[in-house]
Length: 314
Image 1 (cartoon, rainbow, N blue to C red):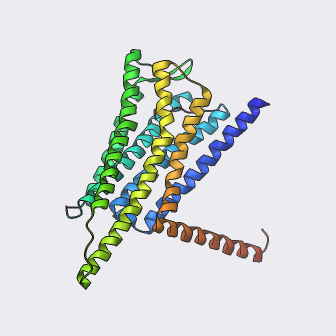
Image 2 (cartoon, rainbow, N blue to C red):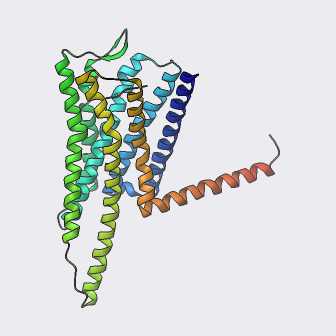
Image 3 (cartoon, rainbow, N blue to C red):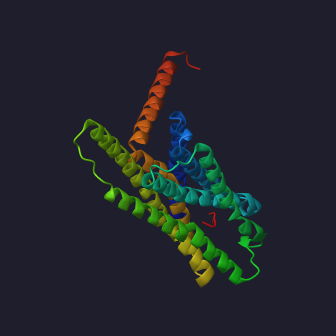
């Protein structure tokens, strides 16, 4: 009975996290499209992040669900599933880091040339390319064995070196880059000069500067929370891999927790947009209102009518 209870608890958690993450990220994509935000640099990065989260959720959660019923294919898990999920994971992390770098540039260097839409698309494309290149060694060593899907490295040292490299690229470097960017943005905003209010022109400039400052601070807080979630929720995954490869320590409960936290991270990003960004919050409310209005309209018309466990490297 204890085993059955654990099975159902894990199954329900997987379903809930998947549904919330899927709906939330679809909302983000719809709202960005409706607002034509894909024409802006921030919109392009947000779109990339939402797609990365959807890739991770849509390929990882269904496989976990099928695992519960013992009907997954080991060949699929070792090839397609592992490569796509880890690529989506990497792309999401690199996109978050890029958002911090871009925000730092436009806030602290407002008079320098801005990144153009074409440049942003190239940037995002390079993010996804780098995310996939990082997975190539894993694709090469992952094999289907009698024990299931395993990484067959030439030596233990090679495996440990790859794990340490992933922790550096997926966690430590993004942490350092984003921390430096946000600290420098905070210092810049703190040192920003205050204009005197002796003329209408200066007042207009001050008002414009204050509006830009408020917008920058709002976006800064939003992205900072996203990064904080990334740092907290994805740390257990890195720790789990380090424990496995360097201390030979592992447990089913640990891996389940890391998988759920990774998916939870992917489904919390759109929630953060809705809570902290006024424009996204209004768009969420308007979109949901239209959905319910349409549902009630269709329901009224109908009544009047005649009856008729997956472990990824990251």
